[in-house]
Image (cartoon, rainbow, N blue to C red; front, side):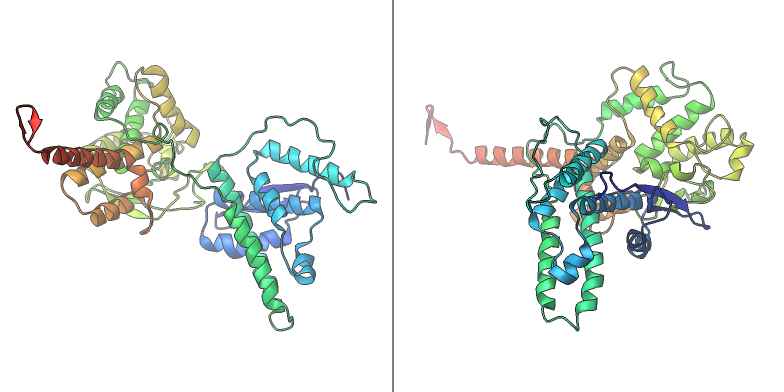
Length: 439
């Protein structure tokens, strides 16, 4: 066995229709790996996943392939000869690898490969920890990234095993035993995903902005304000509109940057938030922002439309902007504004306006959902209608539980108010006192 890891890379490609795709390739030959590519085309592409999601899946598969190579595991032989997929200790190790940051992951795999290739041939037992240097602090990815990797590895192994088991259905007496063994492996892999116990999270829960902060933002983003941190003219009007679109419509950053002029119906006071993965007309190429969830039509307020029309009048001066049609453009050449430039809008506010909290597109989404939930409680809106409205506004699925996550501040406030009412009611049940003593 070679002492080098397999030269695996994720290569982005673009189909003729403009759709972007990610393949796992051998960097030495430039050729894609057959099985992972078939898996990506047959399953991931069919789900209409974004380029970044497919890239994440291929990276997870890359972790699995590296591990099986290092350990000398042939999955086909495991299924057809040994009647199993992975042992529990192997599942445990894969789970550990999925928690490592990219650099630490590569180092761990190389250390494992060195240990395996240098192990004495006379022994059938390989001590994976022999002659290891003292452990250094290694970088880990967050819980969400770990779970995403494990999910993709689980799905890839299930896809492979399902295809192979079908071939065995008619000719193997131990067919059911093989199915059971593989099922145990897949269940163990799924169980490796970590869960948030929701303990000690009071200080880390994301909450919306207070009404005082919102008022302060209104003052600062006014193009005529002396505190406005952006260059006078076009940038001030564009940045104000961008922040208001995020705040008033609860849009994600990628959704706002992906709005086309044709999506906006000024007469009907509506905007379509469309999912356009890999739009070939987008000059931002592989760095184009993406709309993560489903399409929807949103109502736009009168004041927001006025700000929009005021900005559009300035936008028309950029002839280059007519080629792509995106709403938010750069002040240099009229190209669509980039993700990094959109991020700099908030950086400018944070750096030049003291007293403002750490602003982001996601915080503004939390703010909208918090304000909406407070309004729903105040107007006695039913929970069913509240959840339906929030799911539609935010582009969430009909079963999504994100409404409660994004409006946790309002839910906590309502729970505290109800708790006070209950406390007062309990206090009111206390019998009247006479001469300082209970009756």
